[in-house]
Length: 449
Image (cartoon, rainbow, N blue to C red):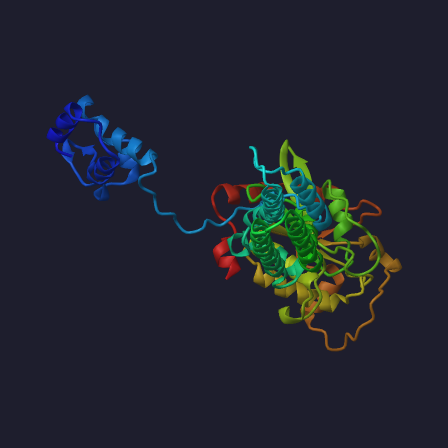
């Protein structure tokens, strides 16, 4: 910017809006005592010059900031930023459709005609009716617009939370409900504007009253027919808000294994989690989160639904939840084996499931635990699952007898091996903390692909 302009500007009349626009496009900050176009330097250099400048030149970047603050120029918005974990806990409170409708109707009835002396009764009544219909429409549409803006787009969620939405609600259900809510909002606006306009054109007091009644009835009919979408959104918000909160900066121990092998019992022993414990498959119907404190350090422990021996295409949503935790979260794995077969899955099938999962997540920190070892000791051994062993491989025979190498044999009933397991868990979680601090973990972009 030529200094001659600044001198002349100080002696002339106050700059006009057009001159401010020209100033914004012409101003250049001083960098190393030279005038450079702003396109050649970064915003950081503008805010904090890398070299000292004379005090007489400090007004130039300051003026650039002040002119921009007048709203004469808008910065380009970057691409949408992916949400971090915890988006479900930020969901808004959704009103039931009947409450939303009743509240809007009650508020609209309080609206009075425009203040002033409207002598003509017909004009006063149509003014009141049009204003009430407009208020009714806005009281219905604005909350719906708020829901649309507050519920995050699924593509912007963390991959783990995207998986939870798909597996918990069903593929496409989340977007479908949001689409219906938006369609309801548009319908309310359309009907409200139409009937408010008709009311404003009424020729008599009676006609204005009739137009007002027709508009209210029409909006009520719209909500009766399509207001179910709001109740569906309320249900979705309740389900998602109840999902356990996962902290990516906190080490996590994920218990994995076939259904009913004793994972939930170990979660109760190792953490604050209180999962349901029953003797049937798929007791765990979701991701359950507990916490354990070791040496004043807080860790997470998750109980996951059991895995059966089948390909991924045939897995149910409960099994896919387990794989989603392992795929998208930085976890250490505690794999639980039941060699008695009491769980309903034979040891040979458990072995094959174990080998598949161990190969898929071979880079994870790992602990193997053989549960219910009180049923495996000495001559009192009880085998619940019968299977053909004639064609067993040597590796399966060894697994059936002792489980994986270096596995911990524990019993929740007799407390055998629990102290050694807790010490190992402490060691593994401490190592997992070091991995997180060093930046080694699950890359969401890779995991989601």
